[in-house]
Length: 72
Image (tube, rainbow, N blue to C red; front, top):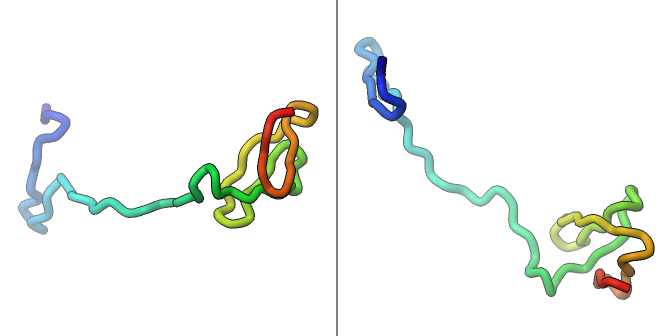
């Protein structure tokens, strides 16, 4: 039985069983102080209009003033 990271080469194609992938940015968001939150369709979430970051919004616990989310 082969080890988990043992490289094998396909004799027909010459292709290795190990592949190297380059890193890429999947998603980026604003800095936490730069978010501008707005109410979303789901009343339990607020979404930043700049970067689409969503975070929970608890009615009675949070308040939304001029795009900033804070605790009451």
